[in-house]
Image (cartoon, rainbow, N blue to C red; front, side, top):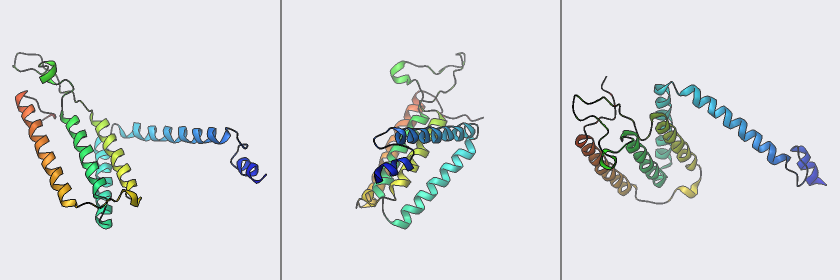
Length: 180
């Protein structure tokens, strides 16, 4: 039959698993290639963040030219704000688990350990941007919204969240980065 010829062309039989097995093999091979790229990029933080900046710029140019997808952009903003908070927060919260960071000069030095490590922060941000960029190719995600309200709400949310985080940093005397 013509369906059998079609499946044979794909390397399988009608009702067989060869097509599924080939798809799984291709997926595994692509996964390995992605992992090699990620492994090679791990010791190169500057290049990774520059690549993220380039994708972000391309995303904003696309949204500007399309004059749409503001709800997708808002969702990206909220998600990435959440990632940022994880990145600048200590892994062990002194408020709930007791003071772990030294508070006096005679105490042992304990390095700042992030709740969300830098590489995982970059990877999640890049993944979210690539998903958002892909969503701009599908009109069903271009919901009509009044974007200035979303922008003002995001700015308000960012300000309140960062104010709370900065107060936490001051209260427990830590900086989420090294000054040298």
